[in-house]
Length: 196
Image (cartoon, rainbow, N blue to C red; front, side, top):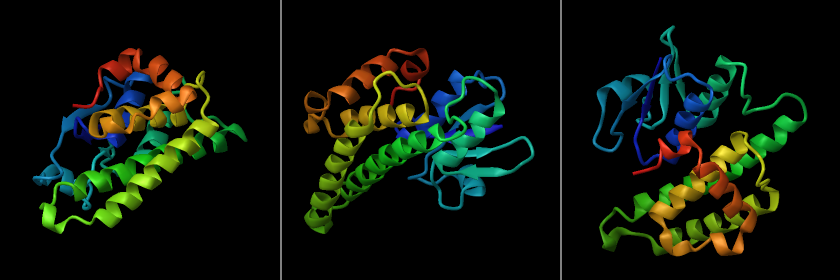
């Protein structure tokens, strides 16, 4: 199997963390891709030219980090990052909140790469407000002791925000998220995938 990723992508980081935590390093080769400049191998797997993208041993392409993470979670019995039963829904809800934070953050990042005269300050303000509301929502449902896909996604989002939007200063007003980030970022799987 091959996972196409870019080092700064918080979405790809979720998958890379699961690969390490589930002991799949020998089964999944990580291939660095550049979706911005164009990458023929990535385009062959994901016509949207987005990372992450996984090609499995049967040649089946898997795109979008929630689907890839669910697939990776099913490849090895433990640890489980998406539980069975009713607990599953809380984990997936926290993952969706974190992914939403990352999505609006990426929109701001892309908008800021446009020439200044073409940037929409209205959209940037709207996305930033959504990002801040997302952090509030994540704090409300955060479990500092959790180690599941919702926790992984939350920390990937927060650490990416620290990299791209250091002015947010979210940690002081969100102690549960700050505690979760501190706990998980000390794990080898997180240290090995720190966004660059």
